[in-house]
Length: 152
Image (tube, rainbow, N blue to C red):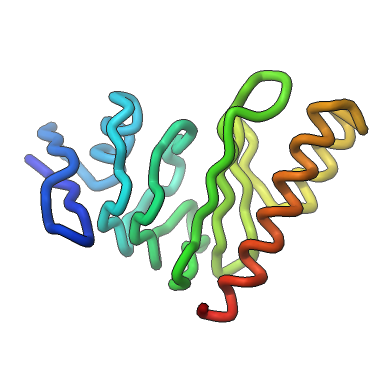
């Protein structure tokens, strides 16, 4: 089955994916693997649970109501995701999501809350240059979602 991922602003097709038993999640994964920009993509309500979005370019994408895992959904706010990268000792991408259960962070194989990330960060990097870099990104993430939760 062929699925088209379209731009929410222009309606133009950003990526097409054709596969047996296809889904939005499989199509997003295929686009990310091919390094296709999904900037402005309409993905509202998509089930992306378990999808590795490392390296995904989703600036301006409509992810409102998209599922990340089980009962975890992206908030319907103007700017529900924030992307940084490369960061840290492994030059990884870091994606932050505003969800119905608070902020969630994905970087490398880590996916969890801000507090869980801070604990993992303290254990791995303490206060070295990588730890400081991640701490600065976390400060920006927390400020960003504080500002945009107000519906600005």
